[in-house]
Image (tube, rainbow, N blue to C red; front, top):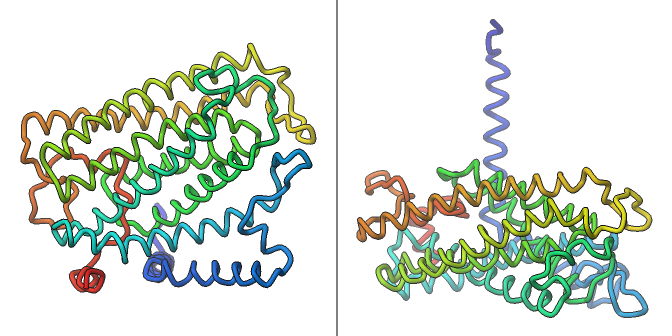
Length: 366
């Protein structure tokens, strides 16, 4: 049996400590560092320096007004990752923490309240804009148009903005996931993020954005209502919170369980009927040899299993609400608080930054 080398163990501990120190450094400067990058890019744009407009605006417009993919999309993603990082931290610090104090949220829950309220803000806008770009499109409640006319390599202005901004948001969530305090469903949450990012990146690069648009809409509606229910749980528990949670359950079962299930079924069965040809030919935008169908479906099914896991958590919460209406938040910040096996916070993770000290909370609410 190989013995552990003390030097290797010491080196591993130092590496872990260094990574933790870096994460803490970045977490404490979530406004400062991104704003410097955003400010530099905006200054370059207003000085009319070349290249800088590609960070702020989408690129590669055709003569007919439609847009195609571009290498400059990477710079666009970088800029909006910085924007989302600074926006999230600033909104929480300067708007939502004071709001938490105003609506009598317990001090130990200020951070959770702020995180969930920000999620209501983002997912609500994302859902509304997703419906806007999808409404009156050929694939509005017609899954066959996910695959007809493949490859579709051009987009309206609003569609390309929508897709890339969503992409940037989910890339920024990698940072959020790294600085958050690990929770009980941390592994499931990591799997969810990996699956989501793979689906977004592959759908954009390989021209499956129609089905991507539908998946976004299915996910964003229940995310909005769930985050609202969690926020209300901290400031207005009882019938209002429970009613919101009930509405979320209906939306979750309809969009994430039923509609997303229909999308998976479409992915497994309809490409055979409607894709003109299964071929790999990147110059023409064709990234669809037959086996790719199973890669896409496999990623969706993996995400669906996570959804079913959280659906089970939902029914456990419903049972708690019906049998123990005074049940507290299971994922408490304090070891001496009552801990339950299930709660609203277990559903789809709790995107939390590191635990705040009493000094931090006092500084943010003064």
